[in-house]
Amino acid sequence: MTEHEGERLQKVLARVGLGSRRICEDLIAEERVKVNGEIAELGRRVDPDHDLVEVDGAPIGIRPGLVHYLLNKPKGVVTTASDPQGRPTVIDLVPAEPRVFPVGRLDMDTEGLLLLTNDGELANRIAHPSHGVEKEYLAEVEGTPTRAELRALREGVELEDGLTAPAVASVVDGSLVKLTIHEGRNRQVRRMLEAVGHPVTRLIRTRIGPLSDRRLAPGSWRELTGPELRSLEAAVGAAGRTASGATKAGDPDAGQ
Ligand code: URA
Image (cartoon, rainbow, N blue to C red; front, side):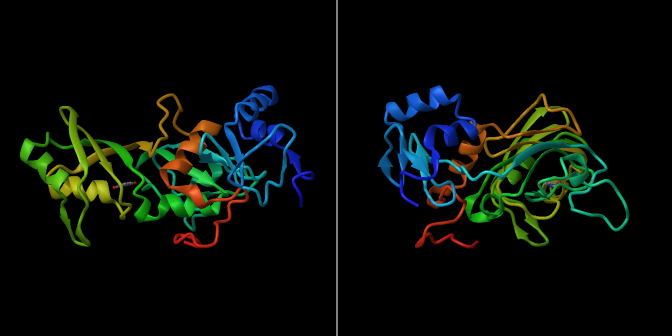
């Protein structure tokens, strides 16, 4: 496909939430949009399956059909596609089509933010420990951690599967602890707090990388906005990603 075929660039930009077509034309006129590394001119057409489109230097995923949902998972819902025991799953809480899958998991009793998508490449990048996407939790615990116990959390805690990476830890109020980690081990937050003597009585994930939303009610979901999706892609270094979600040859992370 040549640059004279395909979809108009402003239409593609508008579809991913960068603003109206008029605003997107302005972005192009201001030379803020590149296609395959070159500043795009008004009238440019692109092939969403092959061209790499960047706005202000950040690549944007423009393939039609990709969806990214932010769900506020309630307690008692399992993070699997189907549950042999017939318990409600996170998949039951979002639209059935297109089919999506959860990125990472939250325990059945954990509440809070969970990303669901059909964007396999982005999901792999978020889940991959090398990208270290931060996840922030609010935990209600038994007792109040002392300064020494907080220091232990910040230095890394010895668990049965090895030493954890240092966490960001603080007491918000009494027995409410804020913990930020970038690993994704099974029941990690519960085990870390238990290891320093403060079993968790309630756990809520409040942030995934740049994504947070205090107003999203438990059980509700919404699509990520264009800016949220771009900041998430930036957080996982999706710089080698083309418009189609494929990775460029030579990208050491390709295929992970
Ligand atoms: N850590 C936990 O202990 N549980 C979760 O669901 C997520 C992180």
